[in-house]
Image 1 (cartoon, rainbow, N blue to C red):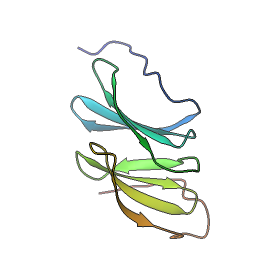
Image 2 (cartoon, one colour):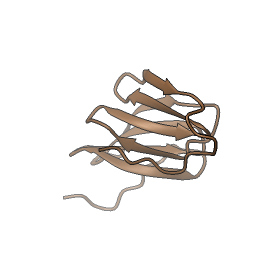
Image 3 (cartoon, rainbow, N blue to C red):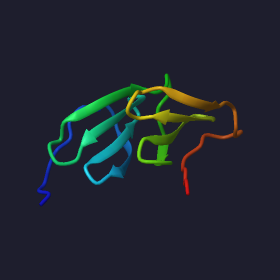
Image 4 (cartoon, rainbow, N blue to C red):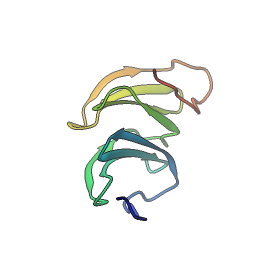
Length: 102
């Protein structure tokens, strides 16, 4: 059973939280970081220094990959290794504010 839990670590506004697996969630923030969390313990499992800009949004692609947007670019990340798998630079003329992967 899940009780109320605080997840502490981001230093600026959290812009998105997504369920990755039954026991892991992922969050992104204006602090330019993506954090992988254990849902039940609140432990931060990995920190990805994703950008020099604020991360505006993200979505889950698979149980280990996400896509995140900062400014006009999108990046695909492996959340376990923290490795950027693909960058789509200047893919839009305006900031990307929402992503939907399916």
